[in-house]
Amino acid sequence: MLRLPLSWMSPSGPRGRLSILIFHRVLPEPDALIPELPSAAEFESTMRWVRDWFNVLPLGQAVEQLYAGTIPARALAITFDDGYADNEELAAPILARLGLPATFFVTTGFIGGGCMWNDQVIEAIRRIRTPELDLRRFELPLLSLDSMPARRHAVSQVLTAIKHLEQGRRQEIADAVGLLAGFERPPSLMMSADQVRAMRRRHRIEIGAHTVHHPQLDQLPEKELRDELYISKSVLEDHLGFAVPGLAYPFGYSNRKVREVAREFGYTYAYSVGNALTTDAAEKFTLPRLTVRRTTTMDQFRRMVNGTPLATISSSVALCSGASTSAVSSACGALV
Ligand SMILES: [Zn+2]
Image (cartoon, rainbow, N blue to C red):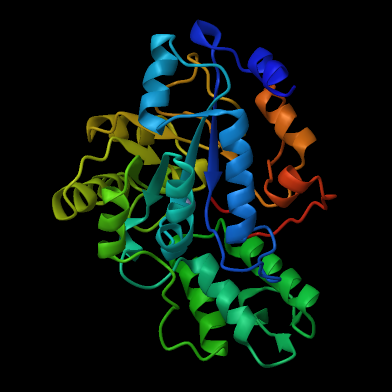
């Protein structure tokens, strides 16, 4: 009964639309500190639902078919950003079991060790033993850590406060939080080179670039911009040995210069975060994707494929089980 309205909202051929979903991580179990991330069981439920109701295509093929006017009805592609180890350990086996293709956009500077600044903050706040987090020297308020909701609030406050800072300053604050947790080095959460290679060998898995250091590209001086786009592509192509046609912009941000450089370095398509469906009217270097979280309801999903703009789209338990949803807003989940 759902296929008909979905087909009407997302028809085949020249009027076709493509839903490109973004995920980041799949966890072994739900995590109270980052509640918007699905567990492996929840992700598998969502993927079963998607498999049953949509035509899931490899991303590159889907975009080609969209522009050629040959996209099937209810077309959907699955993407993951950042390159977390759990993508290879948990998500890829689920996708393989269900026969679903997916594209994984990897931040090459973290291959084989470390983690991004947001995860450093989250993992530090998880481990800090003092009842308060004092970052007043960085002009942040004194933050309570005396309960899990307080810790969640502290994560959100810190990440929101530093998200748009200059890269060096942002890392300085993330390092300061890490020191309070006793980190000698950042926790290692990302895929190794062997894991990236293993992913690529899997049937119907594509790898894309997501820069070297995950900066906001439209804020970078030209030399750094060029390095981020060139080095990430060449690391994946020259050292890991496969073609990388696609680029996902960190946080979804680009400007005309960013798109020109991406084109110059041989990317074929680049993906933003428009929280909109992709049509053949979309520019090839700003193809919109839909952020997927754990709490999307069926109704939100319908609105999404109907092209109704939503601030964010969340997914999984609510999508599959009809459980009620609360708007969990975690700054980690706001990252793309
Ligand atoms: Zn990202």
